[in-house]
Length: 591
Image (cartoon, rainbow, N blue to C red):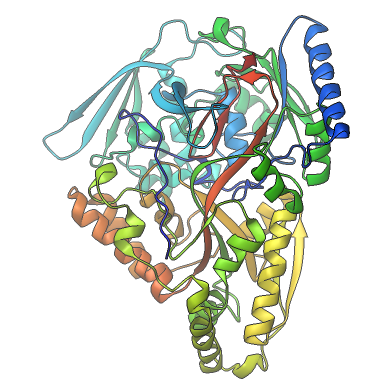
């Protein structure tokens, strides 16, 4: 298989992390963006109109405002409950963790200077110390900045972090990402209901000092401290409004660079500068408007008219021309687009059926003829660019692990022969007797095109009938989470640069385990990997886990490794990005 090692554009102080390990409406396929497809007089006139409109909008009150589109209506605006990349990007503008992503000043790969790369630096924390204890545990002691405040002017304290981290692991919160803190002493027992959340080893020593004790050293812990799920939230507001706290600007109090101004459901979310943010003087836009849209034609039209300054998705037919013209940029993205099967329901409770469906996918055709955005066929689940035992200096996890099947056209016929035999062994020779099954995906031209290609391949090569069902983003996430499907589109972006970010989510009962997969041997491998202090041994255990997940049980059918597409309006500078899928607009300005 052709290998493409994604460049990690992060400083030595951080090992890249991706939010959504997250899913995203277009991310877990954030696939497309938009601009003019032809350089015609009409297009030039339209662009001139766009520039005039942008100038008029900005000049109207002397302020700079930016309007972007990431996805449609978010499933949640609670940073502890969010599991999508689009939701994470909004959270990163509204909240700030102990650590944060900052502009590195270096151009991100593939952007031709339109975006810089991000680097990890202290956020609400001014500094921290790491201590290795005699019993093998590791303690981090964070000192908070002076003068950090919530958007209502109240001081941010270490107690806010203690409350928020304990809320995350509390089973009553039902956070999909609770396992992100399983390296903290007592976290696993709390999540299992065996200990009280107050026993989590994350505590405020005083108003400015937050102490966290880990079971063992985690080389990605600093990155977790910038992850949205670990950002502080206000206890008094949540107690006051319950699970409705995110819907009212009076209770949606944040501590980041921006604060919530307006949420018009299914239309837009508007955030404005938080005058109490410690770096408010250096922020760019007075407001950032997140337009909530899932119609690719409307996105393209909105970008060309000047209504939108940034988009990621466009009609599938426009992608190749937009990339060729240079209007659409492509940057590195550490993630995998894949199909997941509902492993607890027939017929996909049989690993032979799952493997047959996976082998019948022509991945080369999909990346060359369908997505056409530089994606690389996936020969496994953990993507290229994720570190193995030797870190950034050695071969990555995918190179060391190799491929679980031959993903190229040259081997497709042999793959299909094996797939048909597996289906026959499972009791469905030539597809006979196989029930009609449904493929679920969220509304998007790109996802529809992939779905139709899969539908044809499965019917043509296996003789089975597959119907297609698309749902709006928030509904789709819930349906998939509930396991109310047979086959579903999925995608995962690294939460941090480590293979565990892709593998621990499939433990039995995991909040992001949409496949409903349950295997005691797999669970044991992940648990052992999380407790060993020998990195080479740890990576070997993680390779064994992927062997079981993909090689033996065929829980997922990886299609390709992501690239990120986007378009940014002319004349806007200061946006930065990291290959975890995060775009940052808070320091943008007009050239």
